[in-house]
Length: 141
Image (tube, rainbow, N blue to C red; front, top):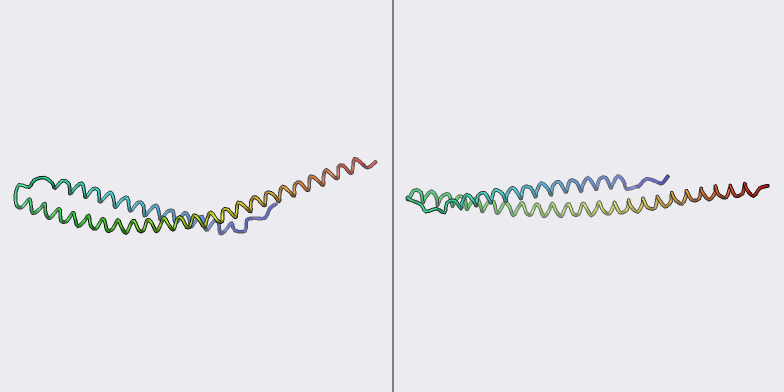
């Protein structure tokens, strides 16, 4: 029987780290999409204030609403920049975790191939011994 892959524990840890990094990336991307959806709703809402106003009070209310909306859009844009930076950071962390995992996976694959080759070689030796023993038994008078 072939020896156990000595880095199996490390490979499990690396896969867990990769899964965690992927979860963080997914969460940050979801927050980014959510922020964009809020921004789009605000833009559609502000577009509704383009109608002509009838009175001074209505004009003031529209101006106040537009100013508040513009401020909110500015905050959303600032928040988006922060979320985008976080998503980039999470994407980089996930990529690095995946690279670390793949390195160990390659070692495991190489180990498995060597172990299979050793098992096959050992089996071939046993078969050769059996064949030689049979041949020796046939040759004996």
